[in-house]
Amino acid sequence: MASRPSPGPLPRGLLPPGLLTAALLLTALLLGGWGLLLGSRPLRPDTLLSVLLHPSDAIDSILVWTLRLPRSLCAFVGGVGLAVSGLLLQILTRNPLAGPGLTGVTSGAVTAILLCFVLLPGFSSAYYPLVGLAGGLSAAAVTAWIARGGGGTGGPMRLALGGISVALFLGAVTTYLILLSGPQSTSLFFWLSGGFQGGSWPQLLAMTPWVAIGLAGALACLRVITLFTLSEQAAAGMGLNLVLWKPVLLLLAVLPVAGVAPVAGHVAFVGLASPHIARLLKPPGPGWLIGLTAALGGTMVVAADLVARTVVLPREIPVSIVAALIGGPVFLHLVRRHRFSSGTEV
Image (tube, rainbow, N blue to C red; front, side, top):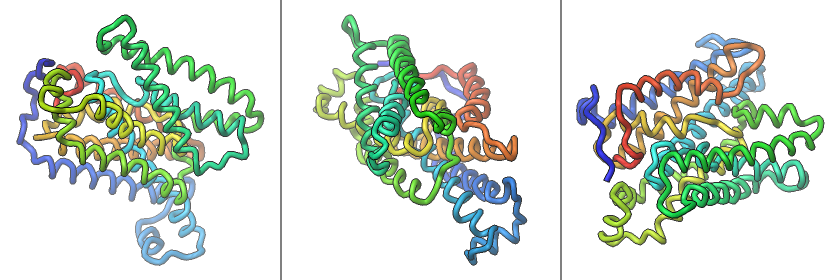
């Protein structure tokens, strides 16, 4: 069993996990509300309140209800999905480096969707999440196969090398596909860079069920997740069917990415960092760990999206870049102050 991290400055029980989760959700709400005010056409608070309470055909109302509000909601739901996916992958692989990006899940989903977009232009976008699901599962399987090469379970470094290898190969494929796309290459490149600039109500409705299934499935599997934090031998000895539950957890981890990828492309860092930061808040059990991770991911992406679309008006920058710039220093600071577990502590 992996050694537990040394005690940090936030001992278990110092702050109630419900209060922490509520604070994170309130922060996301405030950031989202602030984002409704900002943009190439800034709004006053009283104007925003009037628009929210009395939608109309006025330009301010269209700006809020058609562009800014669905985009902020897409960012939050996308962040929740990526964070939960990262947590499940870290628990499943018992690897602190696991995440949608490093395991190849995101690259697989994005490449499969791009392949359909470029080579099958008549293919309905309603099926893109299913395509992303197949691509993400395939990429994760190849990464696991590489990490386990030569026998054994594959340590963190081998998983990282396997994921990097898969991501590099799929990156070359996506580059070639973008070159084939002709005049659409610029918009496709920005989509691949990660962002919610195209967030709309239909996209939100298409993405949310995939994220909700992944989150609800994780909460429904709390006992299984707890047993997975033990060694595989101990979990099997307590009656857990590893042959059944490993694919189930992998499916639950890839489902949110499959829903987010068609909307946001490749949003990095969130799935890796959110679970680790949540663990440092010392949640009392796997249920609260999942809740804190989801709230952290949603808040992080809402903040990153707000900065991405306002810092260099009227232009935008990819959300992935902002997420790394905002969360990277915090994450590195936490790495220096704490020893991470093997990704299994709950």
